[in-house]
Length: 155
Image (cartoon, rainbow, N blue to C red; front, side, top):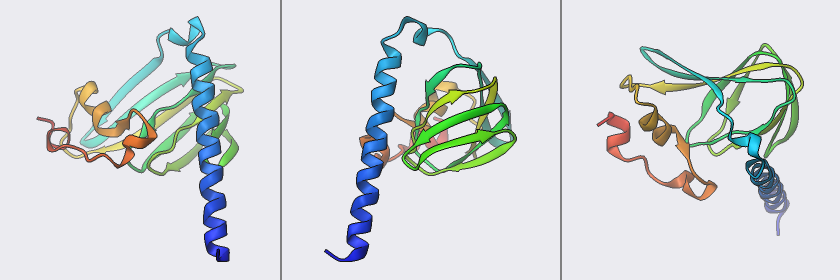
């Protein structure tokens, strides 16, 4: 095996390991009764843009969704440690994070936080179920699944 192949294998193994940790944490969180409390989520729209704002209370442990496409995240308030396939990062607002397709995060809020996910919304769709189907995938295996024309066109 060449050096680039060895390095790529190590990156793939680290990614699998981190994904498994996030998924195991999510399973443990979902087993707790407080995991099913309503989230403080707000949705914002502008021409061609959809933003999902999540207000995270201090002390919260949470996992995010798996996004189909690259997008931006804005931490506009707070201090949060985040685990992804790339390791743990402590983020202090204000900051902007670019997300690659297929990233799933776990986080611990050191302070109250406001986390905003920004997506292109070329047809100005406002149906939240359709937007979630367009931008979110239920599993890592589903990342490669095609987006159907009705999700793109809002029909």
